[in-house]
Amino acid sequence: MKTYLPHYFKRIGILFVFIAIVLSCIGAVDDFRQGWVDGGNSADHGYKELKAHPELYQTINPYLTDEEVKLYVSISLLFSILGFLMYLFSKEKIDDEYIQHIRLKSIFQSLLVSWLIYAAVKLIFPKYQLDGIYILQMQLIVYVILFQHNKSVEFSEEEIALEN
Image 1 (cartoon, rainbow, N blue to C red):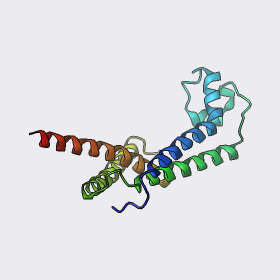
Image 2 (image 1 turned 90 degrees about the vertical axis):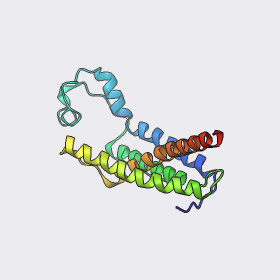
Image 3 (image 1 turned 120 degrees about the horizontal axis):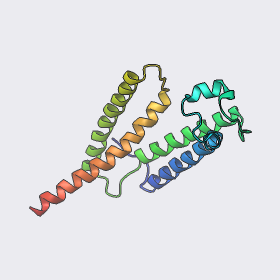
Image 4 (image 1 turned 45 degrees about the vertical axis):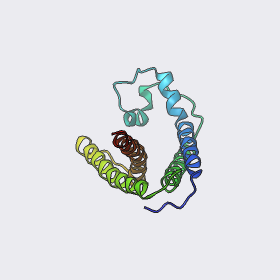
């Protein structure tokens, strides 16, 4: 897999992901507030049921409209995916064929793992709908985790081999 961005774009990508987390939390502030006010009194009811029947819980005056919430969530998704893609296409400090091999291995593993997770969710919760953009985001998250894991495992095995 070819990398096109300099190493410092890894940090920019991580910053984008943190911005996405903050924007996502801002978009969900009314849900956080409702959960705090409700105090677990509506634990017997699901989220969709509570949204459809507001008489089941205490209502709050929302800070954001539904359009603003959708905007925050969309911008959050954009920042998250851009951040992970920057991280994905950035070079390592030492970028050689061995790192490229680990990248390729991690991509194949992340595709397999993310689709297995998706299949498990569909088997357990058949009515749950997951958009393609969320599947892509899950694949990118799984790739970053697997790449760091594979890199640490491969280099620790290499150090053990050099010691012997």
